[in-house]
Image (tube, rainbow, N blue to C red; front, side, top):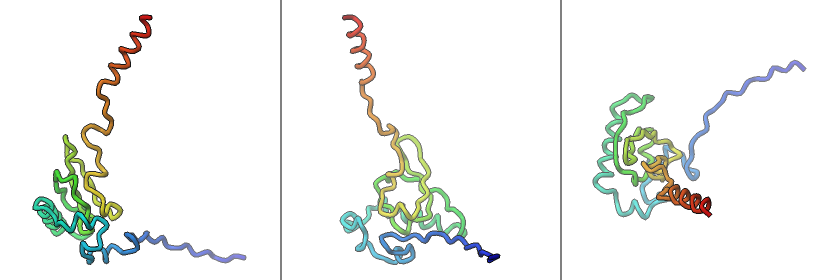
Length: 140
């Protein structure tokens, strides 16, 4: 009855993207990408230079440290597997917001986790219009 229960060591969840490990993702070509139609046109010059700067920032640090933040205005850049672990400062129209690229973000856009300068909601003149209607109802 006095069985000693051995505590199990916690193992970290291994990331897979559509059943493929992260190491295998790095070796794959763009032909297997979900957003193949966009990548087949090729990367623009600014996007290629961003990838180049991200690679340079990752090489400059030790393996377990975070790289330096690379600032960019490219909110429409698709997050590629080689960008995982990088720190990107994405411009939202007012400031550069820091984004750490995680494996779960692959095939999304750099600007998708960000909120733009307007914050999403457009108010126009709704508030003033409702005040005018209230004053008309009181006058009757």
